[in-house]
Figure 1: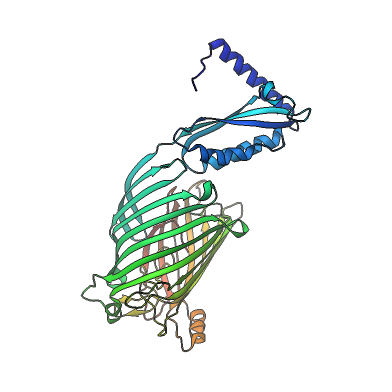
Figure 2 (figure 1 turned 135 degrees about the vertical axis):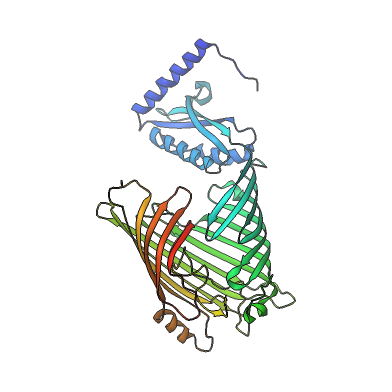
Length: 465
């Protein structure tokens, strides 16, 4: 359609008419109105069917001025959530009388909306370095966005680090039925990581398919399937008998489900609110030459935070628990699937992943655990309340054990009655992209199989116990 050019006087007249219309709408919030059409400007690379699925919902509904603006705001927010527009706005105009005469009840004002879309760049490339969880890494991230005109994206992440020797993830993401709430992801993953705490490397190759959307009680639900070939390889000369026995390949085929409810005011350093996450996994659906990996695995994580004395102090209480139960006849679990705990991001006062069972100098992981922690944060004297720096006092405790399948009750008793405990004091800094901690830690109770760390411990991460 050819563009209609307007003189400067005509443009001024149109602007005056629009201003008068908005002033009238502002003064008559309860006035009945009808939306007769929604026009689109821009968005040339976005499918019309994709836009129509969102914009047509606005039509054929009775509105007042207030409810119409609310509906347009919500639609704009929904479209913005896809991340394919750098700017999105809308405008209202009176519908031409010949298009609305006799169609709407007397006293109803017919209006036409225009959505103005400015598309974001379709290609993105980022490089950088990450420091966290005891590792330094370099990464390259490239993405193609809105590749089929329906908010689809193709992303490649490449990562090389001191512990993650190489990691490549190719991910295709798309909305499910054009929904802004549900999306599907298909990922291909190839990685090699150094498990220095267990004297070996792990190779991972496989696919993951998942759907993410709204869950119960306002939470986020994730369901999916994954199939991975895992290899325990690159054994060190000092590898223990347990690690050497675990060497080789295993194939995991599993369905998983998670539910997250996050009501914290800040996930990096919450001062108010609570957090709950549950994750379940059931593996063992496709046979392989060595017998499929078969297990049930579940974890629950909670945190609550509360500030007091005019936000001078904040107390945070966290707890986590997990269970890995083999479905094989011999009850054995694979070292790749076990839980590994300890370090600056969960139980401080231990070397990274050095809690729980061990064989010689190798930590070999556990099949059930309980962790809990309490932290008290306070502002520093003569420092403003807006400062991201805080004083930190903490106590952590927990147990990581293998399961005695002949007497599970004894495992439960030991899990609860004989925890490893540490305490300490330090400083935290809430950076916009991560949380930094420098703590002096003191292990108080430790199992003989564990590797405690007394002294200063530095941590960088997104989540902490």
